[in-house]
Length: 484
Ligand code: SAH
Ligand code: SF4
Ligand code: F3S
Image (cartoon, rainbow, N blue to C red; front, side, top):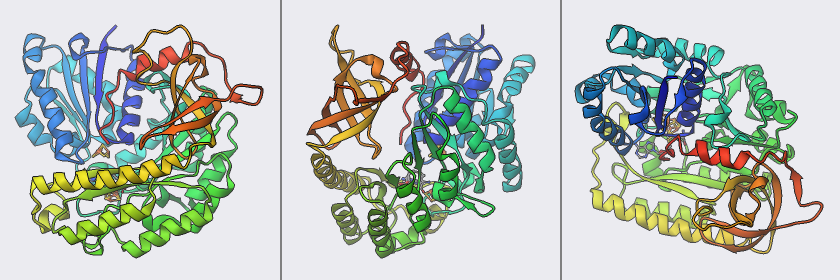
């Protein structure tokens, strides 16, 4: 059987794309390999959001050069956002690459691999302009997304479901609109059918994906309506959605989150900055005042909601004073957690064209560390408030530390609450996939620690499949973690 090695960087969209690539290649008889050396086809699903993500791929490609010289029949491919953006550069920096395939063309991959093997020539499939991109994207919704491969997911009871593709917001720092193409919402019937299929395969939690997921719009149908439409799918216990755009956080959507019991009270709504000047140069289309009102409205309409955010430090022209305002927003925002990034200028964006990358690297680093320290303190307070409470945890499997000490009894398990808090506790590995009650006894800024509640009402559901945890661990090693 031919063997496939696939490495993934980037956001959840890329993780999902990789699952679909594996699904389609398995149907062609491929088996997964754990290292590039063992594989006949070596693929990288790439990200361009920051320079660091691109550098990682070029180093990996560089390391494979001698290997390809020794085994010229092996096929090496670059997929996804960086392929879409930089075909010339890839050909120059990594001439041993056989395949360059954009995000909208992944469905063609099996045929393209065959072409390389038959003709020995470089195969390129990209959306060359936005119109072509739109066409390919439509095709991908119709013909590609339903091919799911549960064994490629870290576990079989959680899955991503794409409800939108692309982005039309054009924040000035961001490359995503040019690599993922125009914003398009997927037909609700297709989404509902995919959710039913996943539920049939044992999936209990779906996370709906979109670059600005709350901008979803199909005819008159909005995200709140879509949540209601899929809500009653038998077998589905939890519904999450990421990532939200602050301007599109409507009361209708918040009402849906409050009233639909399976929809988790967790919102990821990146602020990016706490300074109006910076937000204006970023073209985020809102002010700090608007963002703060949105936070207050969300908490009022969805009691107990957990909110998380993203911030960019060191964007062009960010003064110490601008940065202080961002610190204030993090101090007062009450975020469960925030992802903090140093600004990485992206050629091809308005930000790169219009503004200089004028904040020195050391300053970016310092601001990153300072903001992280503030957020960690806020997260710690947020987590400490949960000590003494009983939470409902969907068990994901053994924690990272679980296999360090040999034990015959319970092992350390990890899972998440509906508010997306990570909870670690000791329990039987067969609990993976079950929803259990846990009493929180200790907390750090990142993790809650607790005791699983035993007794008749403790476990809401478990299918008692003993193979689940082992399978989860085995397959989790096959995709590298997303860098976001
Ligand atoms: N669509 C999502 C985010 C996509 S990118 C949204 O609009 O929120 C994920 C995160 O990467 C962004 O929230 C932003 O914080 C960060 N990011 C995007 N472009 C960046 C850049 N050029 N430099 C540094 N961070 C960036
Ligand atoms: Fe990028 Fe802005 Fe679109 Fe998010 S909303 S993907 S940050 S352009
Ligand atoms: Fe990266 Fe593409 Fe996602 S650029 S963040 S993998 S959409």
